[in-house]
Amino acid sequence: MAERTSLANTTRSKDASEARMRYSPGRDARWLLLRPWIYLPRVIQIIWALTGLVVSLLLRGRSKDSEVQRKLARTLLRTLTNLGPCFIKVGQALSTRPDLIRRDWLDELTKLQDDLPSFDHAIALQTVETELGAPVEQLFEEFPNVPVAAASLGQVYKARLHGQHWVAVKVQRPNLAFILRRDMVLIRTLGVLGAPFLPLNLGFGLGEIIDEFGRSLFEEIDYYCEADNAERFSALFADNPAVTIPKVERLLSARRVLTTSWIHGTKMRDRQELKSQRLNPPALIRTGVISGLQQLLEYGYFHADPHPGNLFALSGQTGDLGHVAYVDFGMMDSISDSDRLTLTGAVVHLINKDFSALANDFQELGFLAPNADLESIIPPLREVLGGSLGDSVGTFNFKAITDRFSELMYDYPFRVPARFALIIRAVVSQEGLALRLDPDFKIIAVAYPYVAKRLLAGDTKEMREKLLEVLFDTEGHLRLERLESLLDVVGSDAPTPGAELIPVAGAGLRLLLSKDGADLRRRMLLTLVRDDRLSTEDLRSLTSLLGRTFSPRRIAGRMLQQLNPLAAA
Image 1 (cartoon, rainbow, N blue to C red):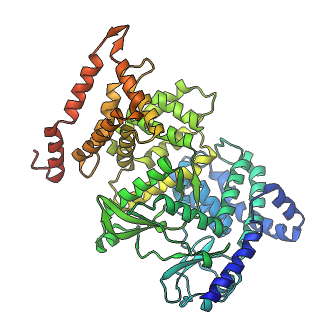
Image 2 (cartoon, rainbow, N blue to C red):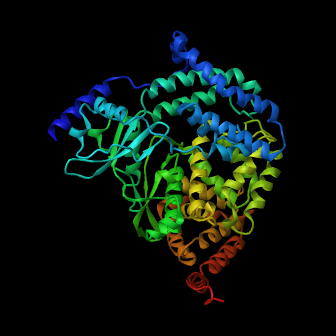
Image 3 (cartoon, rainbow, N blue to C red):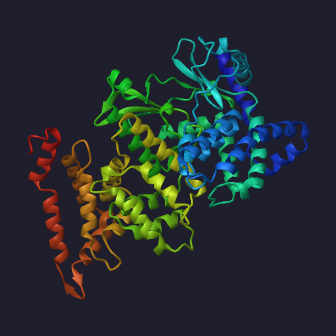
């Protein structure tokens, strides 16, 4: 054990002293230009592979036949897959960009999976020895001859430490940094040269989009970076018993090898498999959605690839939350405090069907240009989002809305800012996972109550500021219809609708009476004075609303209806 620790520390120190490989388009282009024996054969290979695709696009790309477009999408998928890891990642990145790719192509690109052929086991063993400074038989008590999974950038082994627990050992594919560096230069060059001929709706220059992709890709192949990501993510959920993050084994990790504790769980891929393990799919979905919302709207740091292979169901349950484990932290991203608050406001504006404010949110987030005519945008927003909400938030389907939005992007000046590409990927992946386990699940039916409860509780300064913005108009008058919408959303939350109102009421009362509620109390008092005269109209309406909402009979009826629908009939 001491020998293993010494060797690992020595290797770690050596690795840490080296400069990390970073994406640099100018430097990498100069490097490749001086090596024609490297790029000429690869250029020929890429051009040969892409020629058939380009010809197909030129001849049939404008076809209105849906079957023709599906065949083109499959050709695109197959071409990217056959060209190797970098092009597979290009396809995965494009699958998150509805502003770049036709909607009917997106479904095919999202089929790119990590279930790929593994590379030679002897090479994996050599990589482990080189990176960790010792052969696997010295580092591990058991190390299998075949991996349990293979992805585009690496493969995973289930090994056992000496006298200790099982671990997951991820080993990077050989020569990967060289392959990605070479191919990124060629992809950027071909992309910039071919941009005028591509059927893309670009909101940014294609070179910038490729550079964004390259930077994230080189971070993903640095396993030191992934180890840091895992530990940061773990700290965020340290007090949450419903979410588990594998522990990083630092002494057995390096730039191309990452070792973490093994997750003994069931992949969240099949509802029947979960039920056969006596696991509760709805509770697991709820945990996945709520933890995803926490990452985006509270922590500002999120897992960008929560597909079924990266989420495991564990035994046990905490309240109405199932126990879930996240793995694979190569693709992570952050969201600014400003964007977090604006996104929260956008959800609230959607609850209230305030499409004028929603258009402003889109502009502030960068989905609309600063000089865009917002008045012309409001009607299509109302058509796409308003009509889809129906009579209940439960009828809202994020993927359907995203699909319709992707069509709007060709007719209106919408674009997806670079910083939101991974957010869209994360949300769409999360809903896709939920629908796989429960076809009737509606992600927004969980998102709305979550945001509404946080807003009404005013648990942070930013939430209190947003609450004041929502409840009072520019003249200081109370907007009771908005408060009623928020309370209705909270009251409809599953699994015990009526009971959810009680803690929200308590949190709201504590806020109103606390020092943090000074601005709210001042605004409430100002509603009593209109045109220099005392007015109690808003106060009477508010009292009536609270009386109806928090009526013991109403709450009890809701709870009884939830327990036994026939009993409340």
